[in-house]
Length: 343
Image 1: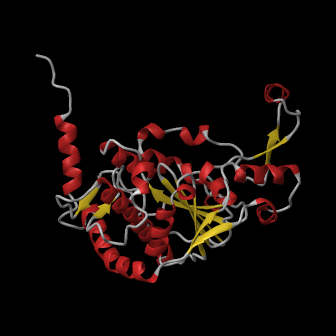
Image 2 (image 1 turned 90 degrees about the horizontal axis):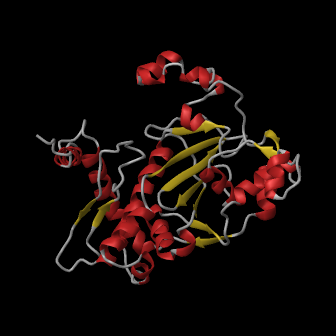
Image 3 (image 1 turned 45 degrees about the vertical axis):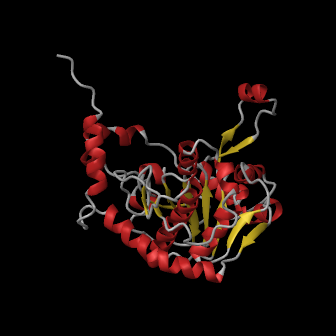
């Protein structure tokens, strides 16, 4: 509730009625309807009912912990600890971190005490599309992501001459601007679908660096970076590019961690383990480490300032003369695509 409804115990729970109705009159009386008990995932929500126990083939009365977001528990299953940041890379990316204290970060909407880890502050940011962008590139090329990926093993940093802004589904963090679209600079007549795919991987890594830099600028310590989710365990090229762009080791779980975070909180509810850390030590897999490559990181140090310059020039209409280009294109397309009224 802290992430979706701004619930905060220290501030009296939910935002005030006055605030909610100032956002939209349709939110009148919603606060009252959402009133109730708010708890973290180390608490017991209840026990398994006889009806569900029968359907699931389980024993009635099994303790059920308070739920949480899938990506938050995925981060726990990936071995996330205090001062770690986990990129849950799938169709989009959720960037999930754990910090010991509240650090409000401009453009990062999710800074919530008790989320991710019940005893720490959770931080959530992310990219609006990642795997979906890769799939779209493959579809346009009439091939598959796997086939394009096989051609990227020997690609070097910057060799495509392309710089890809991965805004195909807007910008979630740090601009919080849905009125953006993907941009690729540097096309030539020789550019290929593989080139665009590699540039898109680089672009998502650059965007991730923008987000992590913003957190660090506002006091968030980042001890380790872990790549989790469905894509990193199948895409070593992506992991290596991320390590080179972020200029730090990137850790990837050595086994499947889908659902492992849920299991950890189930173990806590059952009393099998006393703490999240004890459960993680017992059942989380070890990590494969991708170390940054000095030469490749050097090239990305030259490319990243260009990416950052374009990121804010094209993404902030109130601050840059180029900031109205993408929103206006979107408005024009929406206008043209409106149904023509029948006379």
